[in-house]
Image: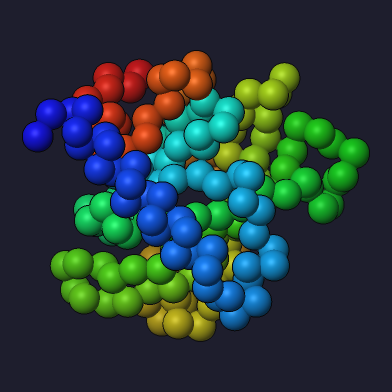
Length: 183
């Protein structure tokens, strides 16, 4: 299979799963989900924000990121979504917004299931994503899964490398990420 063919298949799978996600109510979460700000999580803990041409890659700097990186050895149909919203704590600050991510899956090495929300504050400067500060709101199931490995709630870490790209360069699949030399 060529890279182009692989990309095409990946797009089809992503579209299919996005439509499936939107068709579900998710215990009322759908009402807070914004279709126009979907991002796609990629392998190795990275995610793409397609509409603004920004690629963000996690660095493994703590236990949480180490485990999440391991969790991201998934099949193409395991894709997770989140939503941006204006910063509720400081609505006049246009450089800061909030991002919620729901992560659901199975940690392959142990078979443990996990389902939790990650909460981020996202800082942008002049329309470019600048950094992503992390906080957590973890439910009881996830708390049991993570145990002592979880970071303290409210701890913020600048743990991401950020690369701005033009829209034509935004990776849309696993193949395009693996074949790109990210700096």
